[in-house]
Amino acid sequence: MASFSSPCLSKQQWFVLFIITFFSLVSRKRCYKSIISFGDSLADTGNLVILLQPNVSPSALPPYGETYFNRPTGRFSDGRLVIDFFAQKFGLPLVPPYFGACNGSNQQFLKGVNFAVAGATALDNAFLAQKGIFNRVTNVSLGVQVGLFKKLLPSLCLGNSLILMGEIGGNDFNYAFFQGIKIEVIRGLVPDVLNVISSAILELIKLGAVTFLVPGNLPIGCQPIYLTSFQTSNLQDYDRSGCLIWLNKFSEYYNGMLKQELNQIRRLHPRANIVYADYYQAAVQFYRSPSQFGFNSTLIACCGGGGPYNYNFSVGCASAGSKSCDDPSSYVSWDGIHLTERAYSLISKAILDGSRTVPRVKIPSAASD
Image (cartoon, rainbow, N blue to C red; front, side, top):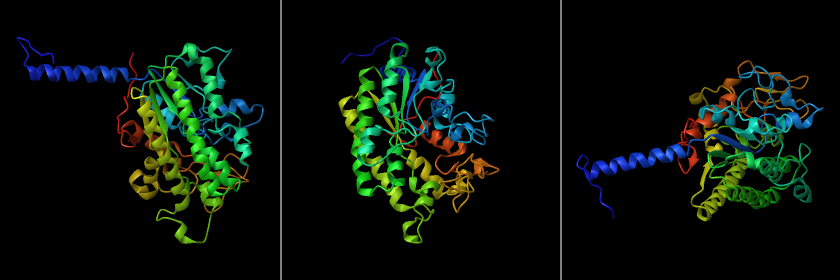
């Protein structure tokens, strides 16, 4: 082992200097110069609105976007999403939707690009259809999104990019649950969904990606859409927060399997930085201790068409006959399916400070020049 010697510094001082220098270099390498996002409506910053034209997405209508942007932007919330808070924390511009590119120019994507599309699934539509599950919203599955990314690859630098892989896979299960597919069949989809996510990560690693943030599923048993669809008079089906226990257990099962899958990828690629973002634990605390986070309403949607949870399958948020609350920041749920800006801000904070990540790592808060 080489010895540290200097007329000015002791061995202990040299060691301290080495450690400081090493972690300074590591931190500098981990500052992100762009965000590349794949996923569904939890991360969509406007892709579905563009793809649906001339049809109109609900997220293109008021009151969507009212809190931060003062107008609809194609985001399925009253304001910013987790990806927006990440970008602002890193000192980056808000990540533009891929399908919003003008004249085929890729210059606007140098600091980030978002392939996430509301309604997207991990599995492709043909595979889901074989299981009797139908996606009537979009055909931009994760595989399609990765294919679109590869077209941009020559103009992107992956080494300094944060890859936000999801949340994706939730809609595979959502469509199945709401189309009456048996829980045993839905659980059987989990390995298929994980295989697609794993394959996407492995492909991106081969292309040069280094750092991945992979979110798990939210506590779906607390969402108004599920509480409305699976409402029951059996009080034993609900926990103390009023969430449906069996649905949350499914989310926990899926998230546990996802963490195992990510562990396998880490063993195969120890130099890749793969972080599990625990959206479930970050969000479930809202329902358990709402007042601690400033929420007055956890299970009722801010914007919706009525009913005990203010969710109506026939009258969604932004539809004629729907009503919006006066203060979205006091609600967890925005439209019965998606969360409010306030909830997303708290989730993003828990991820950025490392308190809800596996491994527990604090993500740098500013991009390097």
